[in-house]
Image (tube, rainbow, N blue to C red; front, side):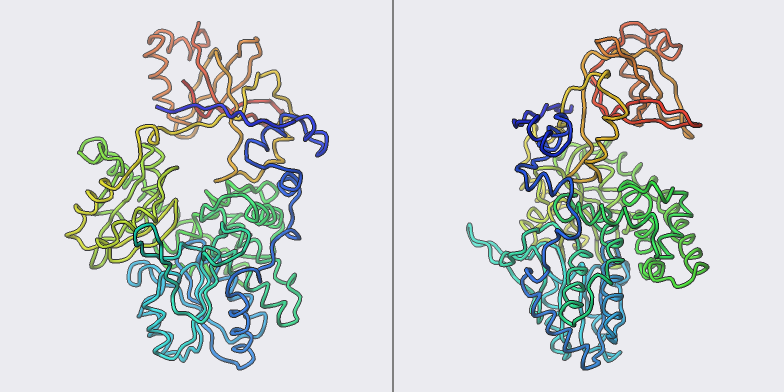
Length: 586
C-alpha cells in the first residue's frame, strides 16, 4: 500500500514568483525541491557551465595534475583503465580525448565483465606491465583497489585514481577509519578530507574536471574540451546520479548540445533509435541512448561502445550504433525472462517474506543482475540483491530504496564477501557459493527497515484542479527540467475524479486512454501507462464488473478515484490537446 503525502513547505510564493518572473505555483514546486534562498533559486533556474566549481578544489587534484604534466612532457606511456558500464565508458572516453589533445602517449583498457570483473585486477596490471605502461589512471573505479594498486606500484608503475564511489572503511565502535588506496593521487569527491562543494558527481564528471584542470595547467584553452560535456551528461543520467547542483547543469548542457552534436557515434545512435534530435530529453538519455551504450559491456565488450564515441566516419558510426541497438534489443528479451523467474521466486517461495530480497538466478547473465534488481525493487519496493553464477564464484548486483544504504549494509557483512563496492542506492558484490544462504540471513538480520519504510511514499506537490491546466502552465513546467532522480517530475493530485470512459491502446494493448472529470466539472483526456489489467480489476472489485464494462462503453456511472498525475500537451496531425498522464490512483 502506498503512502500519499502532500508536501507542505512554507514560503512567500508570490514574492519568489515576482522576483524570478515565474508563477506562484512554480515557486511552490521549486521550494518543494528544497531549493531555498535567492542564490539557490537563481542557480536552479539559470545555472550554466560558468557556475561549475573549480576542479582544483578536489583533494589531490593538484598532485594528479603535476604527475600527468610530468608524464606527458617525458613522453611516458599512460593507460586509462575504466569500467564496463556507461559511466566508465564515458569517463574513459573523456580521459582519452583530453590526454590525446595534450599530446600524451595514451591508450586504454576496460575490464571484461565476465573474465576480469569490476575494476582493477592483476590481469589488467600484468597486461599494462607487459605493454611497457609507465602510468595507470583509473576512472569510475580504483577507490577500493588498494591491493591491486600496491601490486602495480611493486611493478614500478605510477597510479592516479579518479573515482566517485564510497571510500572503504572499517568500524571500531562508533569510529570509522577510511582506507584510501596507496596511489600517488586519489581524486574522489567522496573522500572525507575533500572540500569540493558537491559530492554527487559521477565518474565521468570527475574525469572531466581533471581534464579541464590539466588543460588549464598546461596553458591550453579548457573550453576546447566543452564537447566532452555531452558524455558527462549521458553518464550522469545513465549512472542514476541525483539531478541537482552541478549534475543538473551538466545534463542541461548535454541536452542542448546533443541536438546538433558533432559526435558521429552519438548522432548515429540517435538516428537509429528514431529519436527526434530537436526533442532529446533526459528520458532518452536514461532509457534509450544509455542502455545502448551499456549493452556493449553487458553482452559483448564495453570497448565497442567506446569505439562508437570515438568513431571517425559515418559508416563506422552507423555500423557500431546498429550493433549496440541490436545488443540492447537482445538484452531486453533476456531481462524479461529473468524478471519473470525473479517474480516467480518472490511470489511462490519464502524469499517473498524477507525485507531484503536476495534472489538467486542461476541462468541469468550476470550483466543483467542490476537491471533485474531494479525492476524487482520497483515492483515490490524492497531492497533487492540479484545473484548469478560467475566463472568461479557468485556475483551479484543490488538496488536500494529510500532509507536503506546499500554500501553500508554490505559493509556490515563484509566478512562473508569476496569483494564489494558501490554507494547508497546501488552496489555490486561477489561471494563463495557456500556463503549465499548465510549472506541472505545476515543481510536480513541486520536490516532495520520498518513496515512504514517498506511502504512506497508518493510525495504530492499540490492539489491541482483540471481548470488550472493550460498550455502556458505546461510550458512553464519545462523550467524544472531535466527530470530524473533527485529532480523528479512534479506530482499533482485531485480527489473525487470521475472516470467517464476508457479504451485500451498501444502496440501491446497494455495502456489505457481515459476521459476523466474533476469535482468542478472540468473534463480532461488522460493516459495511464501502468498495469491496465490491474486497473480494470480494481474498478471491477470496487464498483462491480458491470460498471467496469460500462467504462469501456463510455457509459460508466459513479466510478470515482483519487489520482496523481502530470499534465502535458498531445500533438497529433497538427492538433494540440491538453491531457494528463495518471501515475497513481486509489
